[in-house]
Length: 320
Image 1 (cartoon, rainbow, N blue to C red):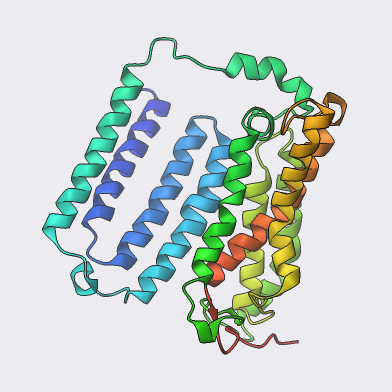
Image 2: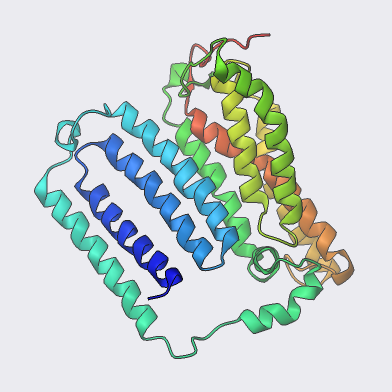
């Protein structure tokens, strides 16, 4: 057995074991932590498959954002309480969940095993037409050109998700500021970190978006870094989230999707199809969409973590 095969085998066993452990966890908090670890292991799998873009997205959104949302939900459900104590029945529900997971796993395995050899792929066609998009990263080319409608829908769906979070607030709380982030303000290391790290994080985010045209990176990865820096500032007490009624934040939320849709409609006249790009303007237009979406997605991700609004404004007053 080669060392690479040994690494793959260990990863597969760890992922399988962790999946079983998540289903067997007695508390919501433990299951959420297991889910985050599961996402990190999946990111390593994507790296082993040479899909670095997918690995970055998995770390940022799969293990990161989704994991923190699950931790927040677990905290509201009493993280040290068992599932039975919060209304989740025991062995029957667990058996049904395990059975459904097994069915899905067997179905996916069957689909993979019945594929012809070699499996059908559009990769050669994408590679042959990649130069027309002006970008060198095939993932960016596919997301922004060959399946741009899917990418547009993936960004649009974040807005209803945020509206769903906001709708959890009661009528008296509407109009306030998100209030789910913990108050960790102090004059200690966290404050220093929140003062020093964001400038570097912003540079990293800009780098990820810019290099995404040629190398692994892109809007979602850059937006996740920006959101993390903003949340760090908020929990350190150096800033406050905007009110849900803020016109400026609402405009920024829809800026990216509006730019995407606008350029898509312009493609009908400029290139003969919706979301088609004139060859000489393809790369600038793609970069414009990516830049606008980065700002919108970063704000959405930060507000998702900040939670629904509360009447008292949420959070702490920013300190000078």
